[in-house]
Length: 456
Ligand SMILES: Nc1ncnc2c1ncn2[C@@H]1O[C@H](COP(=O)(O)OP(=O)(O)OP(=O)(O)O)[C@@H](O)[C@H]1O
Ligand SMILES: O=P(O)(O)O[C@@H]1[C@H](O)[C@H](O)[C@@H](OP(=O)(O)O)[C@H](OP(=O)(O)O)[C@H]1O
Image 1: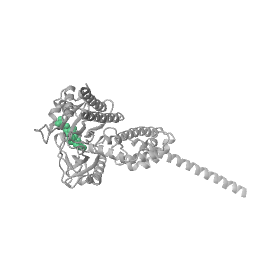
Image 2: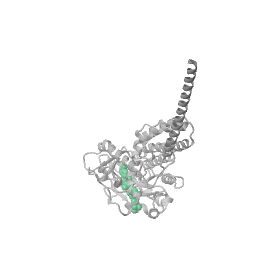
Image 3: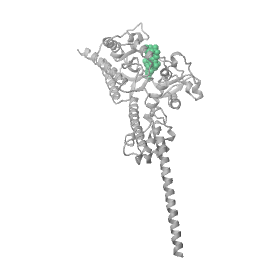
Image 4: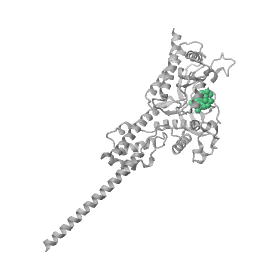
């Protein structure tokens, strides 16, 4: 009896445990299916936007940029400004009027305020009409801001570990996603459509199905990883550019009313007693690929020679006590002068005027100045060669050197990139990158010709 009962209860136990097992198996299969479904859903959301540096349809991204620039301006920018009211910039050769305060220049920034939810930002909505409805114009300010903020952020973030962490085979996805969250948490690039707060949990969900070889998840994750690698490369390029631009100290609101936002930049003319300055718009094309056909025609018609010469002199000024009719001993060459240069020979002639204005001949000092400018252009060119994604349209090179020949210990010439309102991600087809390189090389080779002329 006992044996019989034992046998029966044993069978019951077996049945129960096999039922339990089947149930557990069923639950496991169902959970697995759910996990895979959820993982596929999450994996398909992994997108990298590669259209513009700042995706201007992304309000959250714009808000982040503005907030961060204002914070930086509060902590860093305002310390660089002194108590005096900003005044008109002394040495400006192109563009819209800038102001000067302390050691800095203040460049006005118009924000696309109608998209802003922050009240103090929303107050200064510009009147949108005509040209101002063109998104390229409406967002030019915030895109320049995004450029400087990205540059500042990558230089603050310790992301040198990226190459190993991003290694495609070995590293767990989770740390990769976390790292990316850290690098782009301010959203400057507008590069990921993923909600960053979801990153960590999504990383966990993706891990197992990916490791067990679900092809949908694996393909999406791999595509995302490759896109992140491109971004990593771009961030490296952004990190390096800092030494070729004026230092950036954030954005300030100089009248405190939410009406007057300005970028705070190092004033490049300040170290010189009498700065000689030239602003050149570099590249074969000055409009972004996304510009309307009529805008493209308008820009080309303004200076058709841009494509062949590779740059346009926007303006220049040089000091010589002999310019007695000039402003404080300065002679100034404005936009019409630059637009009147119709050939490479004309452009070379203008460069000769600029580099000879204060010293009269190409003597040892002028040679040193020209050589230093060429060297700095080559550095910019070398940096640019590492850049495979960003194109600079309508961006300028500013050249400054000492125009007072009586100054004893002359500060070295300075060559910096300025004006980043039209930086775009680029492809081979549009290839604004090649146009920019062409412009830099064209300028450097004309300067070499000046030196050869002087020697010959
Ligand atoms: N960091 C700087 N230090 C000294 N001068 C500067 C600096 N940045 C700009 N400038 C001066 O301001 C001028 C205009 O600068 P920038 O091109 O950035 O302004 P913009 O209004 O966007 O010009 P544009 O209308 O040509 O696009 C330059 O030609 C230069 O003379
Ligand atoms: O920086 P952005 O946004 O490109 O702004 C343009 C820039 O200031 C150009 O230098 C100017 O052309 P000029 O130098 O020839 O005056 C152009 O005028 P435009 O609108 O008349 O083309 C501006 O729109």
